Image (tube, rainbow, N blue to C red; front, side, top):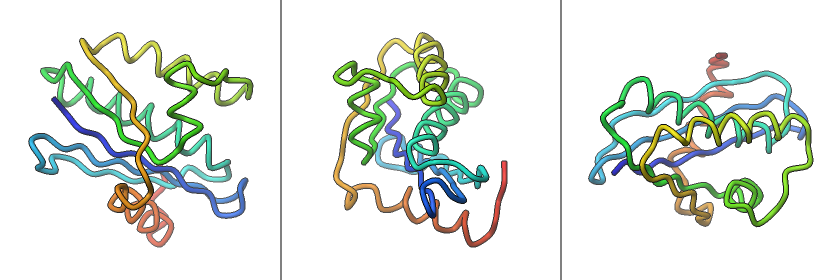
Length: 135
């Protein structure tokens, strides 16, 4: 089972945005990535993080079929879990992509966590801003 921590950030909302993720297996970090995505909203950055980490897992960890995703975005978690409807057009496109990619897994769960439990992904977003690492 892979544990994934995602975060998205926007300076200005909308503004310069980035996302980051950390992939762990048995409490050991096996991958970390971060990117600036240009001008965007915080919510789009959060969703972009989820899309990209799922694509990364499918591509580079294809033998891993069980994933738990942790996010401090209550909106993302509730939308992915069907508690809230997705109304924003940009988010809806990313949401549909996530639903399609998630079919690659035997088990996928998205869980809300407090910001304090998502520090490394948050740090990576900030590094992305400092280094201007664009995808």
